Length: 284
Image (cartoon, rainbow, N blue to C red):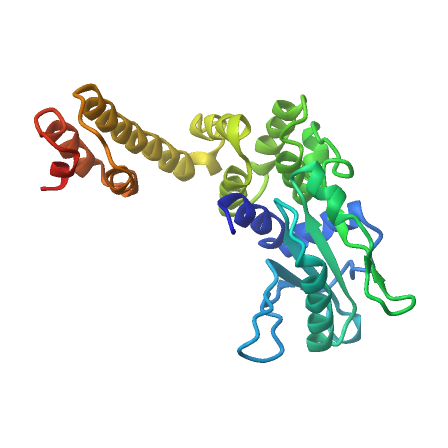
């Protein structure tokens, strides 16, 4: 199942191809052209309909005979089908673009990284695939702002991959400062992708820093986070009132309340929760 973390990690690795090029060259010995255009390629690697062969992301660097393709996959869990589909992705992308292609797998969990690092035997003599995996074991813990500025793609990846490291607060301090040196729109997008790529306490800490609006790029995003927090608070208040009055709240009602982002509507429901006899009457 595709989750927000899955989407966030894929975006971190693909939305700024030049930053990703710098990150990958720091992590792996790859023949990616150091000059020339880097661009997002179609991740649809199907050869023909109705077959579906779609990677999480794809990048293409260089032009003509100097092209190099990158397939990006995010793995949050073990998937026994991937060793078969990954080979298909590489073959189809290589055939379409007529260039060398490599597979990058992003694994935020250590046990998944160990699985992804295994050699994939194809059965043909000499033809094996060893995925290149971005994981906590090979991603540096970047706590220095200057170093983060030198390779912002790697610094952002460090923030999301090293979220369980005891130095995590120092890592995101470096990242939030380094982002301020980018174009504000790019910095804001990175900030959003980091938020959805993190989970639990790490995500809460990052959101707290964004709400502080210390740097200009945080402004619009911080306001959206604050508004989101206010809306969530209204929804929780509705549930507390109903439950305190002994009125059961069904999953359907709970889902409809949580799906509402209009503050005025939530405030009206909050007042109604004080007098209604059933939770469903909120929507009358």
